[in-house]
Image: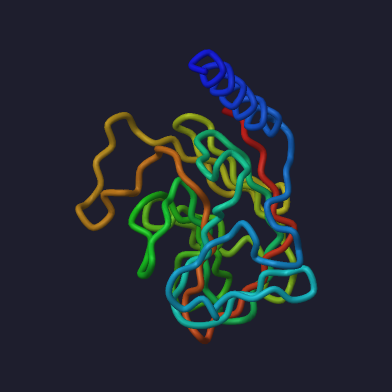
Length: 211
C-alpha cells in the first residue's frame, strides 16, 4: 500500500509539472469571452460583467483577479496582451504580481495605468506612481492593444506595438510605506474598476509564461 501511495504521488507531481510546463512560452487565452470563469472579485462584484465577448468595467471600486489554472495564477516572468477601449473621462488599471483582496486598492504588485482622459494626469501605459506617462498613447472610444512584459527586473509596456514604458527595478529597491508592495515578486493579474463614472472594456486577454 505504501508503495502504491508513493507511486501515485509521483504520478500526480509529474502530471502537475507537465501541465504547468505545457503553457510555457506560448500564448494562452485567460478569458473565454462568455463568462468570468477563472476570475475572482470581492466587494462590488457588479462592477464587472461580460457582454459581446468583452469584460465591461463600470461601477464602484473593485478589482477582478485572475484565479484560473494557467500557471496556477502565479506568474513571475510573463507577457500579457490585452485589447482595451476607454470611454471619455475613464480610469482603470491592470495590476500584476498582485494577490486577491476582498476590497480596496491592491497593496501588492505594480499597476499599469489605463487612462486616456481622466482628471488624474497619469496616463495609459505608465507604471502608476513609479514611472508615469504624461501624454496618452491612445484615444478614447478606440480599441488599442496593450502588451506588458516582465523579465526578471525589467518591465516594458507597449501600446499598439509602440514602446511606451521601459523600467528596470533597482536592486534592493525601497518604496514609501504606503507603496511598500510595489516591487517585483510573483502573483496574478487584476483589472481595476475605478469609479462609477469610468467605463472601460477589455477583450482578447492572452498570457505567455516565460519563466
